[in-house]
Amino acid sequence: MSLNDLDDEVAALLDDADQRYTSSRRRLISALQAGDGPLTITQIVATDASLPQSTVYRNLTILEEAGVVTRIVTSDDFARYELAEKLTGHHHHLICTACGDVVDFSLDAAVEATLDKALDGAAVSAGFTADSHRLDLLGTCRDCAKA
Amino acid sequence: MSLNDLDDEVAALLDDADQRYTSSRRRLISALQAGDGPLTITQIVATDASLPQSTVYRNLTILEEAGVVTRIVTSDDFARYELAEKLTGHHHHLICTACGDVVDFSLDAAVEATLDKALDGAAVSAGFTADSHRLDLLGTCRDCAKA
DNA sequence: AGCAATAGTGAGAATCAGTATCATTTGCGA
DNA sequence: TCGCAAATGATACTGATTCTCACTATTGCT
Image 1 (tube, rainbow over the protein chains, first blue to last red):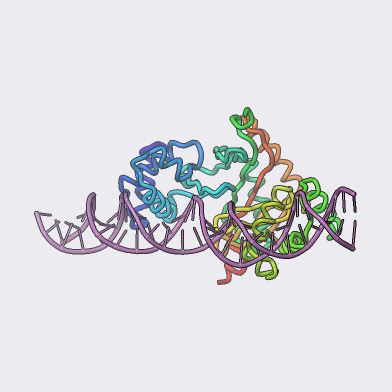
Image 2: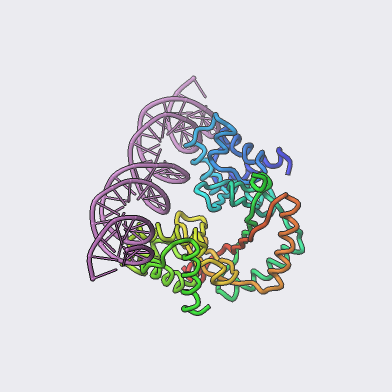
């Protein structure tokens, strides 16, 4: 999705939620777009120091409610945010258990299909209405392996 | 794994970590064993009111370091703990996005094998040393679907 | 058994990511 | 341009988790 298309899509989602697409929110989207994985609030504030922390928290919550971003919790004490899959496509996360960093990756469609089928079966037999799945790979990133 | 085998295995793991298998820790293991999914601290304290909160927190941390339990973070504000996969076998989680409850489930071995192969490929091309994976199904549990 | 020395306990204080408050500013509609 | 509702951002607050520390229990030694 190009930057302009993304912008239009975000604008539409915010409009649906009766929210304005303010400049703080634009800068947030831009910071998230620039990362190669979900970002913590600290990382976002470090990237764009003109964004006050309270605005970042509030707007990320609003953007999440509007379906623009997704909140990710790994194991460390910091929530992370990324653009919703609707905007970026389905993907998964490589989580470094040493430094906590998170990077995106994708699986090929055949594997995803097999997985979805198996998960649907499991959901049905547990009386569960499946919505989506979340698959993370835990391990050590290149940098931490070196250290 | 039978209750006695579990007990022996936990004792061995704690011994390796130079930790004692005290009665608080036994009660914790027993509470975790009784649940059908990872439990929050609140749930544990509710189950066994003789366990003070500070002891539960401290001992779960120690048990996690010893490799006996695993800390799970979903999206709500409460961490959950379960017996380590080494003790219970590999499994996944159904997470109810309405009430936050978590229930265990398993996939058949063929699907797991396909998945592991695909994940290994992804890890290698990202320069990542894979350790384990985590697969959760998000949706609505029977009780919340009714409501 | 008695006696350190060491480990575990638990009530309460401290920490800190995240949320709520509110006076001020911004920007849309008439 | 005016008026009003929404957004901002500095600051205070909340609550899950961690830390502290005096006390108790257990281990190892003789």
